[in-house]
Amino acid sequence: MSTAPHTQPIYLRPPIIEAIIGINFADAVKESILATADRRFAKHYPVHKENSHVNVVITANAGANALVPSGMQEQRITGHKRMSDSMDEIVVLMPNAILLSHLAPYKGWDHILERMKRDWAMYKRPGTYRPIARVGLRYINRVDIVVTGNLVEHELYLNLYPRVPDELGPIVAYMMQTTFHLEKINAQATITTTPVESPTLGHASFIVDIDVYKTADLPMNDKGLMELLQNMRSEKNRIFEACITQRARQEIFDHANP
Amino acid sequence: MLKRGESLPDEQHVMRHVSWVRLERDENDNVLGFLPAAFELRDGEDYLSVNWLEYYEQAHADNVTACIASVRSVLPAKKARFGVAQVAKVKTLAKHSNKPVRIVYASSPKNLSHSALHIDQPIPDAVCEALALEFYKQHY
Amino acid sequence: MPTLETIATRALMYQPSSAVAQPAGQPFWINKPAPWRLEPLAPSQTSMIGLESAAAYNRVLSTMRNQTYSSSDLLRPKASQPTLDEALFDAKASAKILISHVSMYLRQGWRDKLFYQLDNLLDPEEWDPDDKPLQKRSFDTFLKAICDLMPTARPGLGVSHSGNLIAAWRSGNSDRISLEFAPDGRVKVIGTRFIDQEPVPFSAQANVGNLKQALIQFNCSTWLGCA
Image (cartoon, rainbow over all chains, first blue to last red; front, side):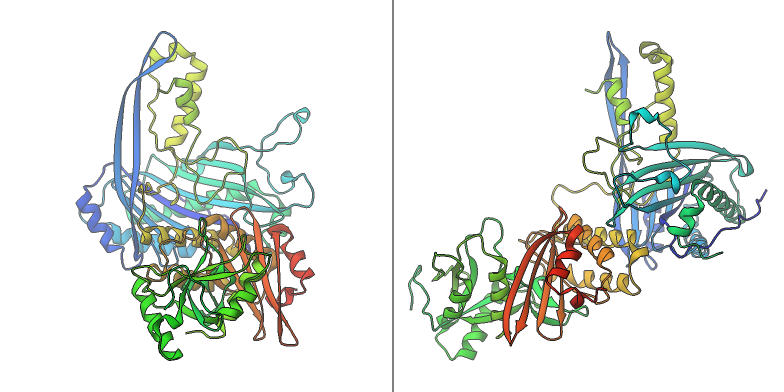
């Protein structure tokens, strides 16, 4: 089932600081097969770093007054992280996942999708392709609001923020994470928003991090996968537009459409 | 020949090695000068390292060549530059307090012409800037 | 050894990613996957701490698991002592990522030029091993200044012994200014103006927030091509 593409306003100054497509697989591949896959990416991503992720499992037993940890296991997973020379296009190969990341400046969805098609074709060879367990599309946006006084009226630009009692006074920090079910594509979206240190003077910055992911009814072929990503992108856009105000569109993102 | 610890004569010259990252360059990396940071002390340093040109006891140009070769044997980076200034001028530019500026011969086994430029600390930024301009007047 | 409360607290503590930065004074936050994999509580354990807390704890775990990693989540653990090449590479990568974060504010051509300059600047063959690598927070201060000043003239770049970025401009062939950007937001201003061919140095310490005013006071903002 495909959704109609969401009509996306054009922003001359898009707030996207990172766009990620992540595909997780049901099974892991051997290191040797992953290394072979890694070499195929060298042409487009010449900068290589080995990439390790550590999982620590702590098991605990009930004690008299508290849980008492009874054991600890460390599992180190080694993968490959490759970057373009400009370090704004990144691919991460893990035994059970591939991740494509693009840093700002955002070059548009068409560019992201073309890159996905190219890299997916490179990745899929005998030994590397397995059933997909999760498809994720994550866009990390940063909304920079001009600050003229001591208070930032972020609610004039964002529709997503915590609601707190007035008597507690202004908020000095928060992090809010919400998860929604997306009926149209039978997926979930996790939205995280939090203020961050602004990289520019005279601004207050807020992250609006939208992670659309699907773990069931996953595509069995490439056409289905690309169609799913298109639909996830439409949903991501719908969510983003719902999270910002018209004032943000005009004043911050330099809305190109009247 | 001077002994270690003796001051260099005012009419003689010293050379300062300036690494690539402390060269003043334009946006296309064409070299324009030395940055004042090239004449700042590192944490824990008591003096600025320079080399005594007349140690080599040759004509000026040959002293420069020999000194550069000697320093490059210790600091081989190719894009570094070398600036030369007269001892008297350096002492004038570096003096900012009642304490005298001293340039003393301080050879080491790997750097026979090494000398130490002692300036009263903290060295003002304006002194670093003045030294950077002066040493660049004769650079290699 | 951690109690359940500590484990639950750690569920909310993550490695900061390059995409976000922790405001000064904030205790813990930022939603990136922790390097710890926590197991859901078994029924026998939930009875000890109360069902409400256990349910909340398990929900946090469930949310943590279902997250698309960003490139900066999956960071190579730092070696106990990186080599010079690794340290310079990491410094260059950090700087380029910081540039990407403000790319929407940079003038045309600045990003490409900065990348070119960084590649030349952080060259292991030319690096003094006694120098600290380019400090990320120093480069952050530099970018804040550039985005605020919006100079039309592009600077030459250098690095101090302590890893602070230095940006230098010339006016004509002689007048010059260099700005050294410290990690704490301070900027060291050093320059020379030639008056009747005699060098007249000037220097000041400014905060990046009032650097614009400092440059106006020294009458050298036009050297940077600032409005």
